[in-house]
Image (cartoon, rainbow, N blue to C red; front, top):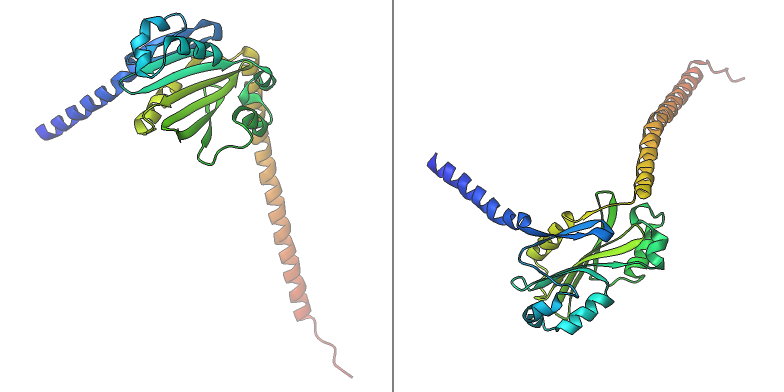
Length: 255
């Protein structure tokens, strides 16, 4: 009994230790984009305004305050988090251009292959792993870029409200191990965003139409199948009756 209780206590402690970082997180509010992003307290959030206050942290990543400020501006970073202990960065960027405006919202865009080509490029490298997944009314591409020049990258890419958002993990150790995958997945799963009401209505309407069509087509399909089966059975019976009739009909004697 004591061994059992000890085992349960150890398991609970293990779970507590490994789930604690999820709750010990800093909330980053992006009011203009109606978004909230959560990063573990281990991350230092860098902005163009406060970059000068984190000179040593930036130098540890082989960059400078000026270079970081230029990159934040050029790459349209909304959030840039740096973790020295994990040797990685996480950023959220936003691009508002003709492509994103034409797509509107990835989940409601009709031609998904066209959208994929526009967002990721027409010819993807063989080592690039792309998955589609939905979360809270939005569609995302999870792209594992693999390791290139000793730097690994994993990104979640979508188009929301006419803007293209990229949530990306950059692993400077070049491992992209399970911990790195779990880290970016956790940040993604806790990413809060708001979808425009009109887009939400379109998606709900499509879901309703799909559901109604399914429940209408289901009995129709079953009815058609029943009719086909009945026709086949009747055809078999008629052929059997015709065969028996021929067998029972006396043959005329030859002259």
